[in-house]
Image (cartoon, rainbow, N blue to C red; front, side, top):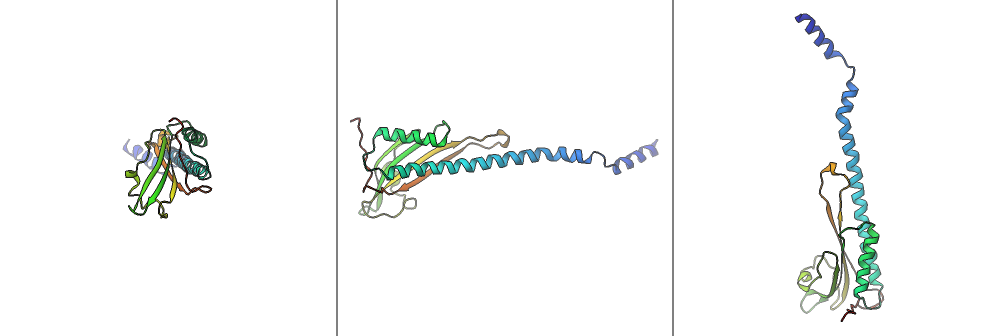
Length: 186
């Protein structure tokens, strides 16, 4: 009986039938996970690029304005951003006009308006943004457009958290010296 068991174990050790099936069963989950991960990461980069392009469109649109900006204009800017992102989420847009005061050696907020879950910028927020904003002449103004978007992961198989995207785009007014804000409600 012992010799029969030994002979069976030797045959079993040399038998290669079904090896491909076992290898497939071991590798298949890894192949599926890799494919899904590539899809999610590609989609994440696509959405990030779309987010940046939407912020640049809004910034360029504001830079071309020669008339006063109104609350309705800011509301429609947020609607445009939502439309360009093509997904209804808790998106946010903040538009600010910032000037550089050479006497005080700091940036100052001329006006700021936000839509979505963000607050207006204050001078105290931007006073130390020397590393984030470009050098400009004394009392020269910039238009700052900031947008926020939450990227929701497509598949929970990756166990990754949602990613908050934030864009920061500044532009100089093109056809007017400054971009003015006029609150029509007052």
